[in-house]
Length: 95
Figure 1 (tube, helix red, strand yellow):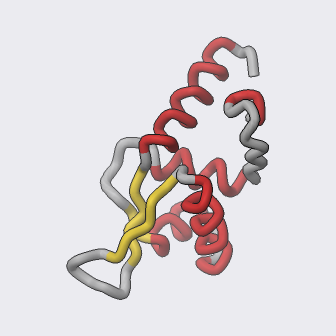
Figure 2 (cartoon, helix red, strand yellow):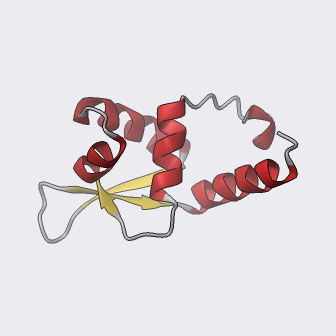
Figure 3 (cartoon, helix red, strand yellow):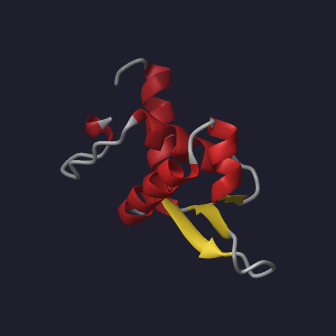
């Protein structure tokens, strides 16, 4: 994965990669709790993963305007580019 983003030094865990792929699957924005449930991981672990991914610009977190206690996770342009590059790399089998 480092080859996909030269010079960045990004080192994603498998959990972080799973979160990025799930957020960028084309569905509606998801809550932190829904993502944790879907991937069967504890909520604190999801929060840590989202914090790291947001810092890298691969996802965006925002307060839900309907229920301010919930956090919605949305795709970003940088995240879409990353997922697209990863898919092209896997399709070529040249990662």
